[in-house]
Length: 408
Image (cartoon, rainbow, N blue to C red; front, side, top):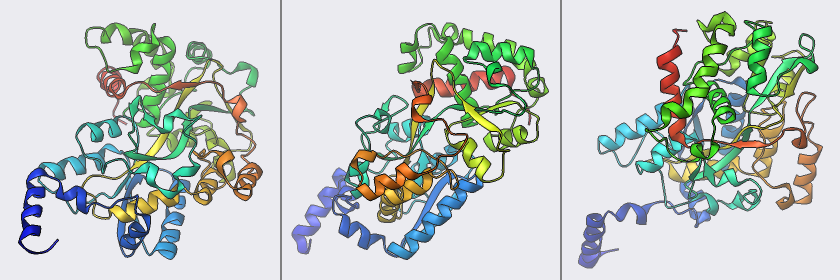
């Protein structure tokens, strides 16, 4: 665009707010994306509470540097909301370019908030990634819907998740394990001080609250939409009646809580807790492989189902290194990176890819992967319970803190 005519067109585009779209990196032109990415530094905002996950991200960063000339800086978060808050603050300050966050590990209410406030890079880019062709969006509908909110391909799936419980078979007999939230309460009555959960708003702790809420609410379809203020108190009454009974039976009588999942895992290893849980079916095997848990730890689920979802990668609308972020998101979706991530010795995070879509060589590599002695087979994981609308997560967290909040 040159000369007077070009200036007139550019002025019109700016007036209409279209200039950013024209200059934005287009994932549909992948060769140009890769060329633009070379030399960029991607600030990848991701939870930093697990050394195996941190090591995996370091590995990915090394591969990105050697293959694409892209630098990856892992900005370690203890709460994804902090990355979202950074983008919100930048937008409020009019910083619509050169933002501090390039890629976010995200799902649930944080995605819903960014989508609602127009803070995501778009229009949809995820299905334009070269490695999208391997994604299982036919049998894993959660790769297209995040906590009931359609992704509209504004985020790329990174891994699967399902709530799984763990116990040490050397201390707790399989026959004595609970099979529902109600039987967990009875188990806690018989074993006071041997169970707990991270204090919400920790993600894992809040997931436990959602599991109980789903099991006890009278009409589960109420959870698929936003909270109805007129019925909220009645809807959550069974959850908090349950917690009123459970709290004095928790580790330290609920006067303190584990900080997060790694803390809960350490307490199982130290013999302070007998039952813990995580959002990764291979977590116990991974922890055994890494020497964090004894090899007598085993997994179990409730036969009526446990919470399941997909976690994603999103790019803020004002990211500085959009091209680098796209290339990193695509690499993390590759069969090579997904295979490494699913290896319990590395991380153990379930893939979002369809094995049927892979090459014979890649499919064989996944099939040969030893998921570990403590990992349940896919047909043993039971039904996946759908995540509630994000409204429920924030509302029950706030209500929990009001009722039980403890100073850890």
